[in-house]
Length: 347
Image (cartoon, rainbow, N blue to C red; front, top):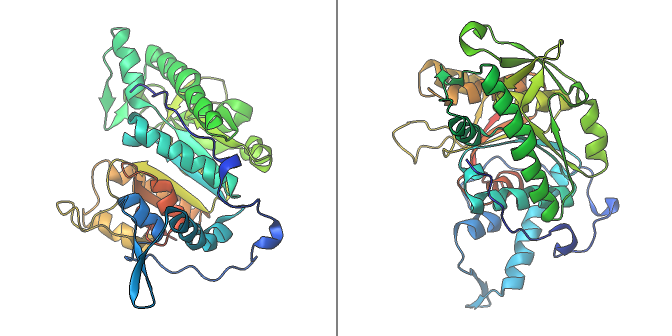
């Protein structure tokens, strides 16, 4: 995977409404409804470029683009009130990382969310990019039970690519879009302390998260910056470990007391029937998702993602969502509409 250099438009100074003041927000916004199958204006705008019509008297009147934008912003207000000042941890990977168009969409979504008062934290991997560099060095990537076998050379490449290349490219893109990003990895300020996995003999330097110290993140977020975190950490002795980015995101979300954990994936979400793409489960609780795992309705690569979500919820995260990163502006759909962009798991 090559991180695309995309052109993005600065957002913070160009949002189509005046600067928000704390008195503009209801401290106790009305209860947001459960997920709806009715598309909101934002969802409709993401799905179609056509302009909707609204009735005026007995005759339909075509909305102007300006009116459509105002309607979308108006519908978003309760969600902005609900999440303003809250921490949202996003794990970034998959198709949204490989496509220049989707990458631009994610970057702009993050900056917009930051501009309206949310506190996004971006955690990323970079598997395809790692594979590319390993092959350039004549080193064939190896996997065991879905995890990268990480010998000493592979660990060196992982750290070089994730921390030195992918991370700084994402920081640059966010800054170009009008945000202010701070690039970090698990080693910085002991954000993540790793330990070997139980299967270390087969996996090498693949680590689990032993401890999270989010102290470095709090002042970064308080100053309005967006932390961008590469999933590389060290143990107590300074040995580097390759940590699964989903796991890192879940543990950081729990340590931060995040409102939401969002995993961007290459699937629509969790399906009731894996063979039926129309059987998306919009919302489910922990007991329901555990039942689906027992019934083998959730299997393969989705199991670790579900386990990551369940673990974060058990540690205090309010909701965890597995969303379709192939959909443009899926982050905004998930956070600023009641329709969402995938499956939301609740505690």
